[in-house]
Length: 193
Image (cartoon, rainbow, N blue to C red; front, top):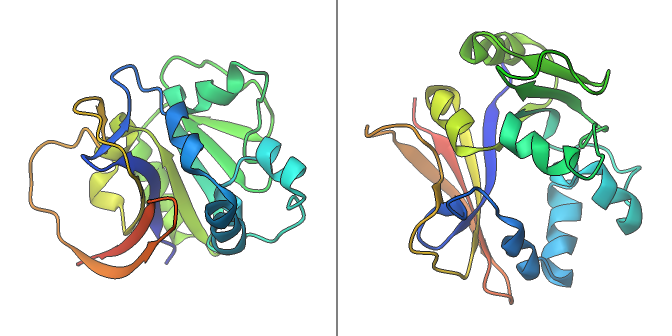
């Protein structure tokens, strides 16, 4: 059975973006050491437009062969003309407002997203990368099997939370912690089932 992993950037205080959802400021901590880690360990999480200039477009996916993201997350690339941000994976965008996909490589999920993820988990293949955002993570919180949290050395005070999931005790087991010279920390967790 495939796993759904929430791979996300966050501030020290648990926000994945400004109140309007903008998280572009996190990119200032993606330096040489950190990008080397991402390209060697999680190359499939780097969007296609970023992989080409880095010369890693031919790298095989290591952890994920499917990506699912919310409409607001997808819109970040769409605003600059990128209709297929993860061309190296199967792509799903969860949206009730997009009537049709702007790209044949991107499937729109407008119905029961939990049922869709459960069906994807039953397929053969690598894992499923939950790309964002907070609303979608909240809808899928009980389906998340693993967390890969990139914590950046910034305190925001308010903003978009890690997930709009409502209060409940959801236990995870710490798998690994890796720190970087730029102050970033990558922490991985597995769901206790």
